[in-house]
Image (cartoon, rainbow, N blue to C red; front, top):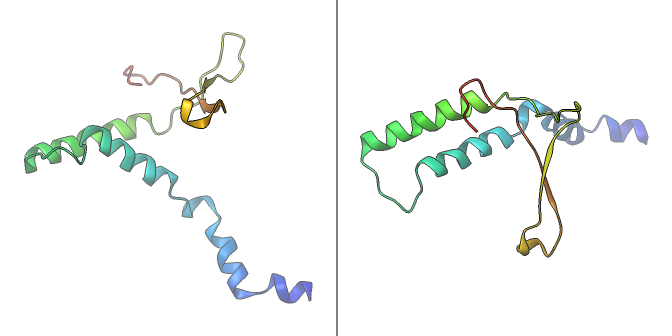
Length: 104
């Protein structure tokens, strides 16, 4: 029975989707960045929109592969926040290193 479950075509297809190449988090991060440069509530001309998209792409490409920042002791650095909407539960984010051009 175990072999039959492991060789199930549906399961194998689902497992292949779990690999890193199929993840969409980087695409979602890029789309979020586009919304920072070109919010949907504001109307832009075509040329302005193209320029904003190009600026968002350059910003994303510059900052996509930055490593995690370290403290002076060499320990990984994290940022904690306690938003009211989470009712006191902390959210933790990794602090990124500064890029060579100083963009954050």
